[in-house]
Image (cartoon, rainbow, N blue to C red; front, side, top):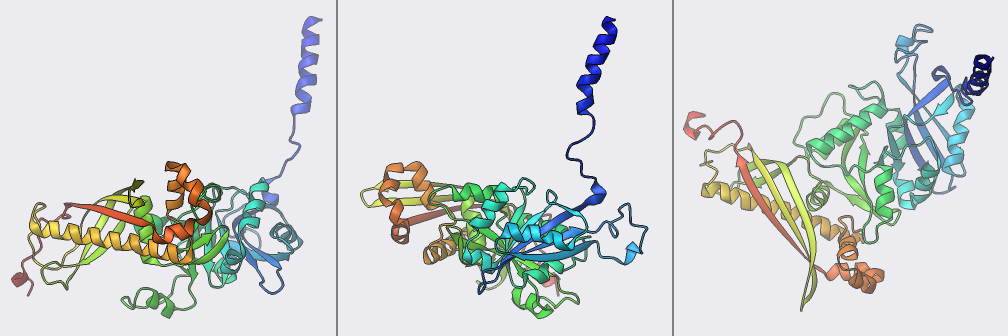
Length: 407
């Protein structure tokens, strides 16, 4: 009798746990891979464009039905609304499956919406439980709808192509300020620091690729759908201008966010031949110093690298005067890049490096005095950029081939 009672109790306890109250079968879901936000300046109508995975072309369970091999691996659809969240909900009017947003790889913001203010979108994304704050955020220069519909030759979907291209340019050239939603929330909460979001430039034609490279490369047969480098500078939640390659590198140098970078300088002997150095390690520290003349900020950068391109015959022993001269010139090139970022930050009143936040953290009493007029103070504040460059290696060759042997 006792055993029967125990069994009955177990059955009563387990029965409510069987099944799932919120079951959503994968075959009934539309997996969102990328989401773009735009706004019409005249009407104020918000547009949301999404890229959805197409299981018929990606080897899903229905791949054998309907000639899936002829279908694109993704589908792009858009909808309008008074606000972005309403536009997201209006997408359901033209889709046969329930939207699932947790696989979203990247958020794309048009230049229009960036200049009008991105906080409403950030606020909406923080409240929507399916949108993950770990997704990358980018600002798009050009036709954002064309970018969402573009195919990337090496990837099965445009979303995956964008995601991988962002990571590649970040680690190979340090020309992109990767910012996730989580990082942007963190920056907005910090006094004296502004957002700096990576830029994607939509390629209209092959000539644009050649112009972007300075005319130094042959025009490819098939241009890439997008060029990724530079960034959008913000004041508050509004974009105030673009940063080009030099300013983006300066930001990366000053903030210690360099994974790999190439510095080109002139040969110290003839002051003409270009020399390339590959920077693989870099550290950056900032601190304020106060004396009788006031407060200044010191940026201390330490970098290590190796020779990458050296088309002339020189003494490349690590302790040679020639190497020391290359170190001084490359240090000056890094210093120039940081100063170009500082100059643009002052011009646009967008402290993307975070000098104001440094004062806020290290000298809170001083910040209480100058915080409300930070950009007036920032314009005249002395910023001392100190760079120490060490060339540790010369690559796999001890010295270049002698000039007379090349003829």
